[in-house]
Image (cartoon, rainbow, N blue to C red; front, side, top):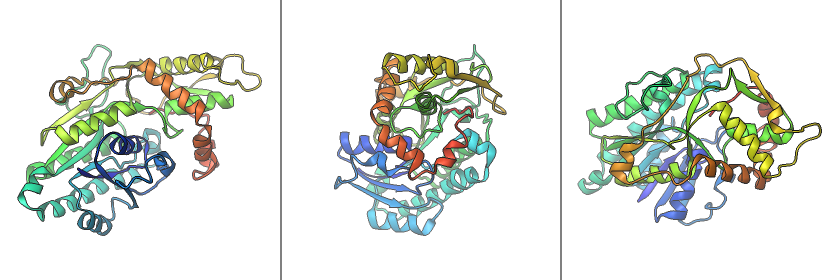
Length: 360
């Protein structure tokens, strides 16, 4: 397949692009606006592949999308481009409305116009894969069963509300116009190349700098954690073998409280012999509890039984093995994240939030 990936310079998008180039025979057209979270250095290993090309394009730019579709003739779209940080959506919802809702609408229309011009065999083979989040389902009480593909939507934040809206648009374009779509909703991702505003890299880097490790409330919020490379494998299974019109939930089977995640990271940094800044005896001593986020969801949990049964996908990494790989990557790749903090991404932008709580 020749796959058009939107948001391919982001965290999950770059993991997907690396997987497609390194592990499949697919061609990849990477379309990314390169906002603050897009980083082409995350794709350095595949940038020279003859099966890869990059276009700096905003998914709200219909003319540019039409030109790419017409000239490059993709067999599938994997739509990951999105504003995705809950705290940013609370501070400024407009960008989330524009990218997640208007951008998805614009991409759907460009894809539909292109799809309508294909011959019958290529129309039948074409797929529009919309990649979404478990946050559209709202939150769960401790005793509630995990989210399934039929769980009712109840988004809590501007971010999750805009993602829920984009999910509904994709389903409507399938039912109304016949566009062959598949959808997936994933749990919290983590792993290499994660932008430092998110919980796991934020805690790692703050610890290495001897800064406070901020935790919202009492840290009891529960999330299901999915190693990003496992997610990339799942996404390829969905776009290549998923049934048109269906949704597949993708989870890591790793429910942990935020405080458990922070404790585990501190302990791994100790075990890995990470250099402690002056005055720091133990990384756990840097943990600081701060005021909780408005409307903070209590618990997410994903039932990934359908994708396992239908497509044969299961995560290869446990939380422990994936987190070890993640910590080791950050310890071994200081040049990547120091350039993020002080190069393409203004140091002041990150520095303003160094002592605020963050979450994936």
